[in-house]
Length: 282
Image 1 (tube, rainbow, N blue to C red):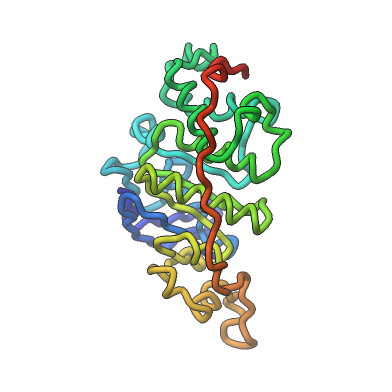
Image 2 (tube, rainbow, N blue to C red):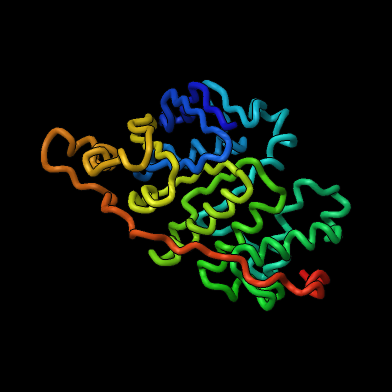
């Protein structure tokens, strides 16, 4: 489904962000990329939707090579969830979620905000499915909590039924409880739709709770690729220890590899939203 073939990234100043990384992420897998800041996690995710072009190697989504000539074909298949939510704070929840449909709309409709009734219904369904209520539809995004804003971001990401969702540090701005809720919600949404998820995280405990597979990067190279249960404290130290510490003093992990709570909350959809909310104002 998503394939990185010997991708490398060297910037003009000589900085190497990735060193010949090869990964195959099958359809429906929830894959978490771990690593310290600067390990190359965001670069890897950005290559998947063409925001970064590799210096070497190639990236394929559903068999199509990611390139400037294929972006209009590929990007509608990819949903994106951001660390800082990237919502239009002055716009309503409904308008923000509807924004996820813009890549598939004609320019004249997008500029006029003329969303088809089916698109508006889908926005309502998704808003309900992420645990928000009817009264949230007309509320400005700026009035929501961080956890609620990320729920809006998840609903927006699924507007076009993407085959792939890229989540770049989606819980970095949230407290531990909200982080658990948001990742549980993201995983449930992906499972229900058979969506592939590539998610970057810093928190080892969350990765071990929610990932089907963990890929760990250090200095732009893959140092672990396997099931969460195999990612033990010694591997965490190898991933997060600074190179200058590795040969001398005891390593200081940047993340705690303690086991996650026994169970994570699973969110269920509320009652369907009333039909009247289909007339949504931006």
